[in-house]
Image 1 (cartoon, chains in turn orange, green):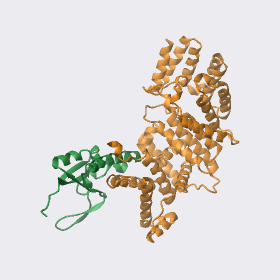
Image 2 (cartoon, each protein chain N blue to C red):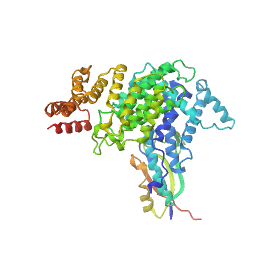
Image 3 (cartoon, rainbow over the protein chains, first blue to last red):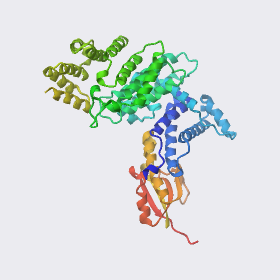
Image 4 (cartoon, each protein chain N blue to C red):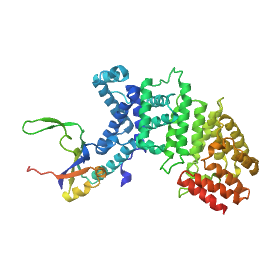
Length: 418
Length: 118
């Protein structure tokens, strides 16, 4: 019977909240972000109070936008000062007085509003962390407690961060315009970084046992796609970022076993990978390579692409992967990249070479708490037929593990040495 | 068959939904729709539900004092109502148990409508 109940699209309200906040912020101005959020809340509650009795509207999204907009018009009418900051609404208000109802917004306008919001959230004075928090709140419709859960933070810390961020935006005054804005290319970098961080938070979100971390991945992908569809965001680097996300997200279904433990790439069931996402990812990768600029996203996407394209683990093209890691390390010389590069080196040119590289890893001091560093050493020793040495490394990895799936995984590895 | 009034009461005067996230509101929406759908299918809905705004006035007897209400007087506030048709009070009561307002602190008051001579 429940199947016959009209169903809303999954996460519809979350999506629509993001759209409405973006639109209303354009109307009220950046200084009134909190007011925009209040109007959206009211609108959703109004839907909750009427839809169950009157039935779903034919176009729920349009209904929500219309109600939010009408509420905004009322506010503008009541508060005279809004007429100055919201010329768009004052005009709509006039139309309504004359009997002409405002047209529901076109999809294109709504997309532009969200992009403006995205660029506005990535204010250069805000930390990357604050930018991501703001994006989740305003564009993804996450509540404070949902953000705290997703970013492994405390609710009051998130609340404070949002308060400070809103203040920064209020003081900076304006909503970022998309056209004729010299600031856009600079901000695009920041937008890329924030989206990359959002995606990784879901993908590698390894410090907790939270439910559905993939949601962050899908939100990041949705926003990156939006960016790709706009002339101001359509850059090879944006395609590279989207490709990277698709090719990694495609492998999410194969990453965990039924009991929730991690499965090594080598033993993953590749038929579980999402072929449609891989296809999209490779398509975006091609578009990204067509540009002139080599970015770290492009190289990372290319590496993910090679993994996705290998029919079996044994067919992995380690030589090419190593070349890409060399390039990546050149662009982004971090210890984690060095670690992955060393693993590729071992796979491409022999275990002992890989081990030597791992032992002399540049920046190893910064990996003191990272469980996958000792795990990589353990793995290479194990493959070289030295389980005794491997054992000590896996024991260290168990000690450093940051959540239950990691712990179980390293413990199994440890056992296989004994 | 007889007619009944369901009154939906919100504890503390405010709906939990005023601070809920969009995702939570959507989940609540799904539950309400499932419940009203059950009522509709069984031919129980006499008059579609009517939500009430939380702001309002209360006019007091005697001197007809007007206060902002309704929560100045009562901690619990009616958030809406609906008219249903059921065999008897037992059935009406049973049907009300699916109401999502009960998942929070809320309550449903089931009142038979007194039938008037024609």
